[in-house]
Image (spheres, helix red, strand yellow):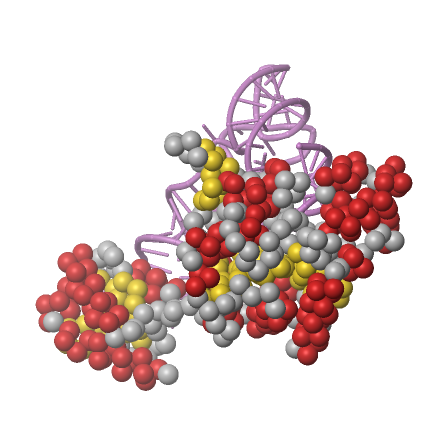
Length: 422
RNA sequence: GUGGGCGUAGCUCAAACGGUUAGAGCGUCUGGUUGUGGCCCAGAAGGCUGGGGGUUCAAGUCCCCUCGCUCACCCCA
């Protein structure tokens, strides 16, 4: 049997209520702030991701789903949410709208990785990006959006971690400081961290190796290397978060896995933090647009994995929305009655009543068994006898007496039976 | 990419030392009621025991390979 590709999932109907709860809660929070939806292609030119993500990142080096199409172009399945939105902003001239342009999306993300708990090759993210305004208040707004979404879902125990990486003009000095600090300790670094010493020293801070972690304690901190504007930005953001009563902790080792970030970076992590447990994260990326050959466009945003939100939702005990109720089951008791049954179902649905319809003539017993398995409160029976007399038998499933109505009155009759019950 | 655990019906699980035709519960369908649900009872359908190879008179069971699931590392959401 052909099976689904590794690391993908079939989302079955019983998952739908929780899924909808997350996406609809997020959409609601977006709309409350004037964030509007955007959708970009599932495939992009590979350069979009390779040029923005950073050569030394794992994502660029080994996790992208890339292929050559029949025309010889290299395309890549969306490996992260931000670059495509920035590309769409530039390509469609959204800088002509009032700034910042506030966008949100719900989209699948593809990364070739070994699957495990909370990690898939195709996962889904809720995300938002605010483009065209460099104010720290925009950072605060974006963080507030994600924080409020979690809160609205009843998830209130995530820790917000915050850091600032500074700007490109101060980055070299900080990078050099890290190299100067770690080089004498190189023999105590694991091989991976030693490689990063030349390729991407900031990412050494992200290492989970206990010995490296210990060395990081005394490592230079990016906050000490911020320029005056970046420092002011960071302080202003902190003040805004405090006035919004959004608790945070500063994590000097928070650097994020993508290279395009500058200044603000943040992550929301659960209290029982395992190693791959980040629920959502993001930051500012004022130089991303330039990496793809566009003008300078400041931006800030986040992505949050829906599957991981769901894991935390279980812990919070929040319950999902009920689905559209089915009120009526229409049962054709003979094949000749199927057409009439479907006509009645349509008439009921036009009035907004949820109806399931049996598709084959079968015994009342099997239809009624099926009807009581559904959530229907009334069964409408149409058999040979009813057809001959132009009536429909209405059987309330709570045990009250069955009644008969003429076909033309069936909709009214069913509605009054439903009304009596409630 | 590295390491551990696990693969028997749609689901949850049985099948002593290798030994007849691989079973049960739940679920599904049908019947018990010539046209009336839930409960109960009965019956049926549903398995190349993940796949391939090997050992053996004999393999769901032992060995090898492979695929998949899962957990952890790594990395990220």
